[in-house]
Length: 120
Image 1 (cartoon, rainbow, N blue to C red):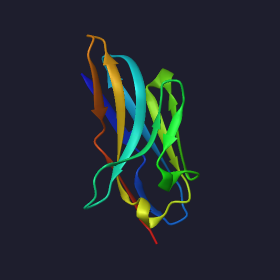
Image 2 (cartoon, rainbow, N blue to C red; image 1 turned 45 degrees about the vertical axis):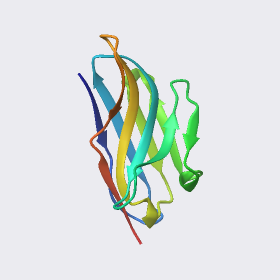
Image 3 (cartoon, rainbow, N blue to C red; image 1 turned 30 degrees about the vertical axis):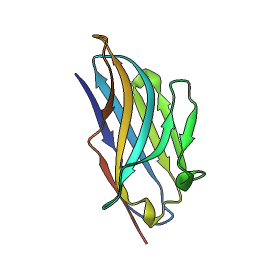
């Protein structure tokens, strides 16, 4: 069984910063791509940032220059540093990881979501 647990969300004023953390645990053999998605009320879930096992990154245009994704492969953990936050960044943020399990399975797993609210 594999589980992704997120932390770090909260309420922050516009211009502030937050750091999200997501740790994968369970019967993990390896993790390929990891990413962060977000979903605001009434909107579809969208990709925020993604990082490969080799460290290559990809960002949504709306967060480029403000957010930084990183990962610690030894800890099966990814991070999202969010700076210069704007009210439009308000959403539930979900972590995602493509995981190879010890019994040979390969699936995309999701965290439970963490609320980020940016006040104006």
